[in-house]
Image (cartoon, rainbow, N blue to C red; front, side, top):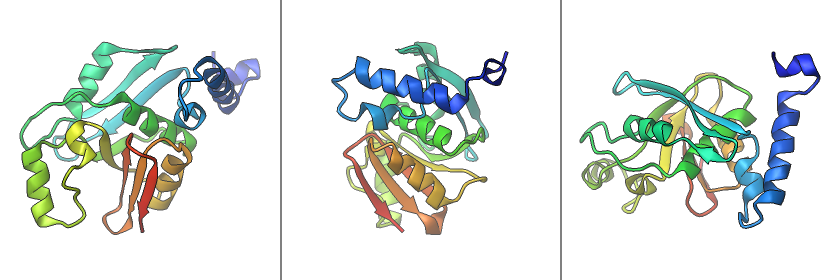
Length: 188
């Protein structure tokens, strides 16, 4: 049965969940912004043009992260150049999921970069001044993403609306950076 059969909209359900989450978890200073649109069942869907792999998984149900799904996410978001794996901070995945829901799309993200080993980050930094020396990618706290059906500006606005981390707009390279670090925005 779909939610439309019982007179409840998806947005209404997500809004109600976000409101109850704020009341139930006052220790999260940004709980509303952080969880807005994420839902009580959270999914993430991505593919990688680099490896040809894709992932479409439920990673959180009713307040609990699913360890097996997290392991899949960690493997998927590995540094494809070195095959290095790092535990991805699930707050970043939450931001990605909430942003995608705010954009009202089921399209999977194209992941350009997830975890980066220090070696990969140094190599990329030597080629571009846009790569941070202490990038959150090296801590498993960031992702660079693209959607075919949404503009960089639309993605940027959705991620920034979560008010939960860093959001960078890279219009010239057609991607958005999302991380669970300090709340900030940049780019053009």
